[in-house]
Length: 405
Image (cartoon, rainbow, N blue to C red):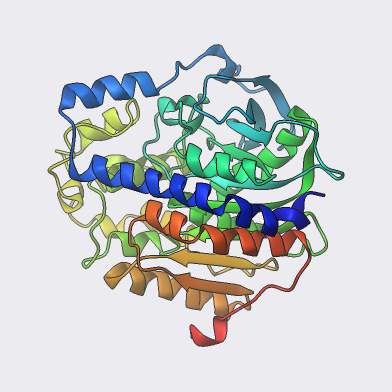
């Protein structure tokens, strides 16, 4: 396998990768601090998005199948990728927030050339969520919502399997931040990728950022009891706090979080009525959230203004928040959690980490000075890759749980 050479590769490519990461983070900061006029942003968004084609469509009802079973796959060359990284789109069976069989889409990125003996080691990527409409699928973005990082992993000799999550791309309700359904999409994508692309190996790790970080941890929890299997561990970047803490009195959530949350609860339980937790002013935006990515009109709003009186007492909301608390199930495989959070967010993150440690999880937590998730993933890249390399080399994983209690 190519894995034992990764230390040498990281060293050899270090300067180039550092420049790439610096450029990526700098571009993100420039977009934040120097916003473009609306017309230019709209034009850039149009050019950056790919059309939703029949590839993503499935019959209703969905024909019988098994989670991880490939429905179809096609090579795709319209992403902004380095010439030595190839891409194949996949459509596969997976599981939804309510347990139903659904179709999920995604992309497999892999190095050009012959795979090593045993196949390319796999990173199953779980993305942050910027909307729950079909058009919000990362595989419908020319940059895959993270090309510099994903293609970097492929350049280092990995196959990267990046699920969209069910309902992003495919015509099913999306569970938003439901860690279990997103985790099932991450797990099932690996089997589908092996069917779609010759040379994809069987041994894999999960990695996620934002809501995807929650999914990556839940992957490890769902793999409990699978000792000796092909799953080797999870990396979670910048968000393992409980959803209820994201809406707490000291939190500063994005204004559309209540809208996305309402859609997630509705996907889990069709009896839920969004108006029971959303204000009257929020309901038109809730409807638009199901059709657009980044709903206009929330920019100057506050999340509190989106919520109805006594929203906390809704039983469907409480069930959703409860099922998405991390650390209430044990994880056998090692966990690496990296974060740059501070203040109330750090307090919430540490609460979840202590809970995971109390379950006996083999967890290593590392905090970085950069608060922006894009900065954290860049700052931590060497530590990520060293940790991942150790998993594939069957080396013992470090833990610092004793210092987190």
